[in-house]
Amino acid sequence: MSKKVKVGIIGLGFMGTTHLDIYRNNDKAEVVAIADINPAKLAGDISSVFANIGGGDNSIPLDLQGIATYSDGMDLIADLNVDLVDICVPTFLHHKYAMATFAADKHLMLEKPIGRTSEEAKEIVETAGKSDKCFTVGMCVRAWPEYRYVYEQFTAGKYGKLVNAFFKRVSPTLAGKSWEDWFSDESRSGGALLDLHLHDIDEVLYLFGRPRAVTSTGSRDFRGQGSVDHVFTFYDFDDGKTVVAEGGWSPNENVPFEMSFQLVCEQATVIFNAAGLNEYFEDGRVVKPDLSAYPGPTGWHQELDSLLVAIQAGGIAEKYITPVEMVDGICIAEAERKSIDNNSNKVIVEYSK
Image (cartoon, rainbow, N blue to C red; front, top):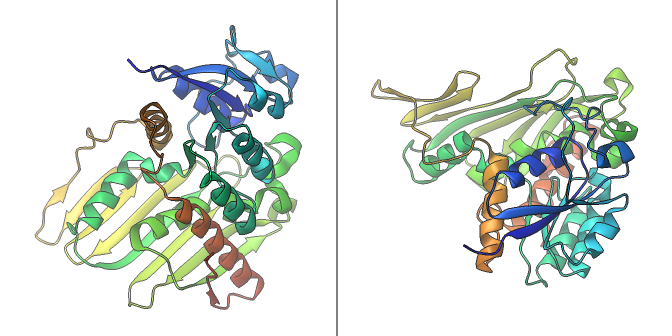
């Protein structure tokens, strides 16, 4: 068996604790260090962690015995026992810790979005390209079993040409649920448009390639958040197909999380929602696909395992997303924001060269 990858996690919020649990159940990894500014979390108390989707029992303290703990993420990055740095801090801190990880010549798992701006994202990707270490960003939906299955079937031509597509991702409000309420601060998080809706922006990009332009409308300043907390976008591909996505966290905290999509194609309509994934073919067949070839149970498990495999093999962790696509998603999100600010006028997406 290959040597286990020694992992250090910066940030013990929802994603940090999720990653911790996944690594602990993966025989390719060993978590050797944790960093968080909250002393209670470093003592194993994660009762303050809020999950808008899934998540374990945060009333059960973490067992961090044998794991080095740091109050400063930079100290974890400097720890010579750490091979892979997994960054799960607020978005506005991604660039800072990512660049420090590259400087320390370590492998990097960076939670989404890759950066607060496309300029930050571009610099991170360019720096990663000069390193021989593995790097990926947590666009986990690409690796989610249902989404991955449909991507592979669609791109293989099983459903025929796309006619229209609709994606939806809606969360209960995150207002007041995070450290310093950073989700509600658009300058830090980018609002729901960048933090949540980005997953479906990325799916549109993944399935259909770069849209030429976007037309978006959105609500802001609901519940006093001051950020774009809900968005509806039409993606213009100049070829007649209609692609739309809705995303946001404007509903109240009693509303369940929802992620769903519908693809209408010439040979089949494919729907994923709370009832699962179903294919409705034009010849009358209704198929519930067998997803056993897509072990999970989530995209988080798959993206992290893929990264660990790449590190052990000395390869490049690009199975689910390329560096160019990491930047493209942020560019599309910025065009959507510009369209919202310009009274829903169509905006040409300005991609990085």
